[in-house]
Length: 358
Image (cartoon, rainbow, N blue to C red; front, side, top):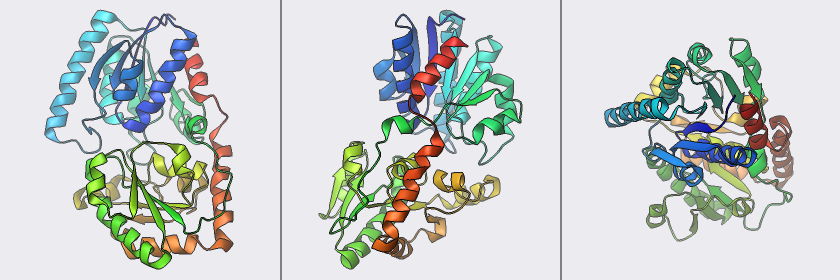
């Protein structure tokens, strides 16, 4: 099949970083390929034609009305693009809510759809897999259990490995600093930061008094600086060489928790939703754990503090306990071993070759 024109889309920051790396590999294999993108700054930097920014509108989760109208308008723009430019292939990255409509549109126009990085339909609303089976030619999944899950439901799927193993370095030193250096991760979405930041700051205050610890807060929002006490340093880049220096983390359950695990950084995972979304999630979420590490292990490898348990005193006590030398090194090495479960290096290149050769 021709590979002269490809459309690729991603709706959140972590997904579009991987999507941009995939585009780079596609361009290396076929420099003549013209790539149309919808996403954020990372995809914009590698695209020949950038259609729309859908990362920075924060359009995921339960969508406000204004965002729904924005995405409906974008879908019309994509329909016009698909009709006029006639891309040979469409690649969708995570972000089920909007992408399932994109996939249906492409199916109607007889354009093959490839899905890179599965939306977490296995965690809730598994009925969505049926819709993916009806619209997607092939799934390229990044968690080992997802391949069989999709295949058993009639979706052509292949585990390509997790792209984080190509970008996240291994940590070699498992000794605790003196004083300990604690990484704080409030999240990337404004709504999440708003709920997490007060708990994290209170946790840091307790740990400062109890352990005289040092702190680095990792966040892309530079406005956080004004909200932090002097003893917390703000790091606005996603520099893994800086992150490797921390001994332990307080972080949300998403990609950052898996990145920390791959570096062998023990952590306390926390997550808070609005009360409405929390009770709605309780009705539809089907997994016991929310951290990917725990889901892969089938047990609580990293402690989770969800909603009403996400209080400073509990989190601070957990961090203190994990920093005891007799348990710290073994926990760090146990986490670092998860790298072996996530495939071999070269994920973006391998996926690009499979898509272009299909």
